[in-house]
Image (cartoon, rainbow, N blue to C red; front, side, top):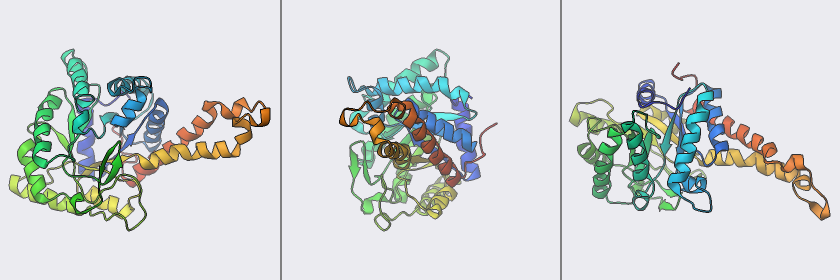
Length: 340
């Protein structure tokens, strides 16, 4: 199937909300990790989301120029071609973009899709994230108010993060403290500023103790039941049951119970990066250790081309990461739910 159209993407999110499951959103940094994500979704018979962070886009742009827009556009165009060979629907998304990178990332990418839509085509990306969690909520929502109508006109869904996720990702960091919990007042202010779909659809990354990366038990206290309070608090005021489409950030290492509670309370998208990075790298490390005398020209020898050929260890990496994506689909209950 091709990359999801705007209509299919909206259907995907609606199905997830109604069925109380979520799509894994897999960060990719190369054509190979893209194939691993697509393969995992196909093997799980699940639709899914592939996303590119600012750091991932800079890496994809090449170390000569490190241009984020070039990197993101190049991989998205590649994805539009190769995804057609996988029997699932996949949406393309850009992850975490802070204020100082909007002009070098999200705004130009929206402009690319605006031109495509004007020409009668679908947008290049199906959704973009504005991460204003480092700003005051007032400033955060003001920028979201500027971006939302542009995104909606280009048939793009906006993701907003209204309060911090702990830890560090691509140079944006927040302490692990009590600020990592979104309040009902935060949610009400968001609904007042952005509406509940009538001004354009958006995904909401609310905080319930989320932290990027993996931490030992006890270091992070997740409270996914908080999402129910946000849904009820806003829903009661606006007369709309379960008004938000939530995103689960910092999901690597979460327990099955925490994930299940989040799904019951409106999470439709869960980001995975740390776990899939490790899954990709672990078999490569094993291959290098087990075949060190083949991948290295030790003591003047010539090594073994079959062991240092990137295709040899690359296939292992792709298979391992794809298996982790299959596991994520099972955890998020999206296995077997692809739109036929």
